[in-house]
Image 1 (cartoon, rainbow, N blue to C red):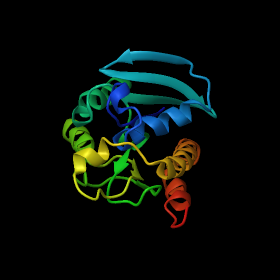
Image 2 (cartoon, rainbow, N blue to C red):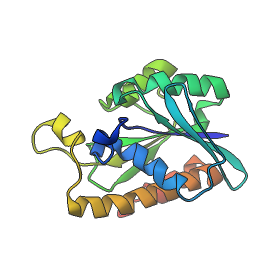
Image 3 (cartoon, one colour):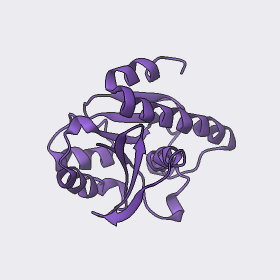
Image 4 (cartoon, one colour):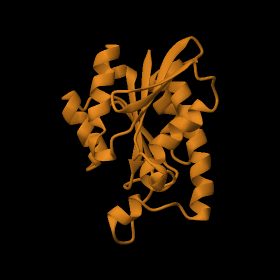
Length: 187
């Protein structure tokens, strides 16, 4: 079993913001498959599907971003998965818009949702997918809670499709192959 966590903030107010790109990527992936089961549990929404023969859970924490670990840690414990079988998808201001970077672990880069998860799991060693949203011209909070411009929205739609492709590759082929394909420049 694999678990994919998409980070974001709950509610219509935040649905199309830069900070919700993790939610939107797993929604893009979910649209490609038949959802076998969907439950609200552990302060999150959990959808179960199959990619090839692999059982995959897509999880949207329904806490606010800064408390994402409150959902992730009980999900990981309940399903008794190794952290190698967890992928967290989130926005990253240090990457140019549309860039995807996948890593096997590492620091939080100041991302409060990721910081909450690492604190609750007591580990930074789990795969993550960063989606570039670019640096703000001024206020960080207004930037991440703002919406994409029309031109950015087109780019981000393509990026979400590519990110969903990468998640499928991760489930089927593993982390190394996924990083080799999707971490290349110009993709």
